[in-house]
Amino acid sequence: MSKFKSLVAAIAIAMVGVPGVVEAATKMRCSHQLPPAHHVAQVIERWAEEVRTASEGELDVQVFGSDSLVKANQNITAVAKGDIECAFSLNFQWGRTLPIMNVTVAPFAFGDLEIWRKWPDSEAAKFLEEKLLEKGVRNIAWLFQTNTSVFTSKGRFLVKPEDFKGVKLRGLNAAFDAALAALGATPTSLPGSEVYQALATGVLDAGLTDVAAAVSRKYYEVQDHFTVVPVISAYLHGYVNPKWYDGLSDKSKAALESAGKKAALWAVEASEKAGAAAPDQLREKGVKVHIATPEEIKALEAIMRPAFDEKFATDPDAQKLIELIGKI
Image (tube, rainbow, N blue to C red; front, side, top):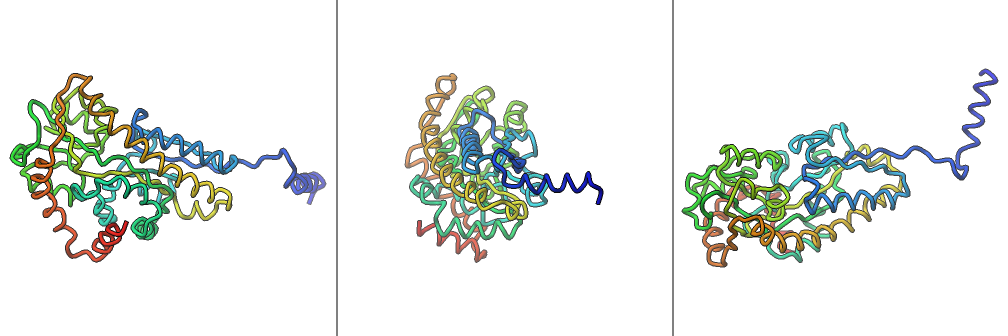
């Protein structure tokens, strides 16, 4: 070894552990589909800052919202393959890859917010986390988004089962789409980022989203009737590449765990606030808003829930998850 190389090596060894010498932070690119104004997008930003702080700068969290890094339907694959380190997806976006994730979008099943406050530490969540790991991603956060959804339409409200006949409506996944089809609707699954344009051009007659997203995505510009109804509970969950995670320090792993638990509570608080404010915000935009009555909800549930449940009747994992959810 030359004297120069020996000197460089000696300096490098000597600098290890010297105060003031900072190792490069570990890059953590996180993709999600929500627009900046969405309340859960703001929770994700807060979560990112918490991770940076708790890891004492070890993790350089870079958040890319609005499908700006990876498209929503490609996030799972991108993280599993290691193309990016982290992403947030909606529960119903797992589709056929992990069908039991769709159990949590059962029509009218999760109206009690207390379930979502307890969810991160529940047996049901741990069961899903095991299944997610089998699919190549490690879960790090559960972010409740809404149990106050809205059917958006033009010219009339969608309230009674017969109102849905022949309506081209945004769908979610096979099980939920079966529930919509039972009403007579024609469901079409589209990423949230594409729905506005589909409504504007007539590709869709009606939309289905959480009531706060109807405001943040400006659906009031292309639809004029909004029926608020607790038909779905939606959440985003954050996940990372397992191999990337295994290479982190204990400090960084602890930072992700603590930040994830805090963010779960922030999301419930933000979602409760956004859901309560959104109907009036829609009215202020000049559109008509109808809050579904208990009788109207019961009539929709009587048709939608059996069609949904039938999709999971022979799936033992789905039945186990349903049982665990019942214990929360």
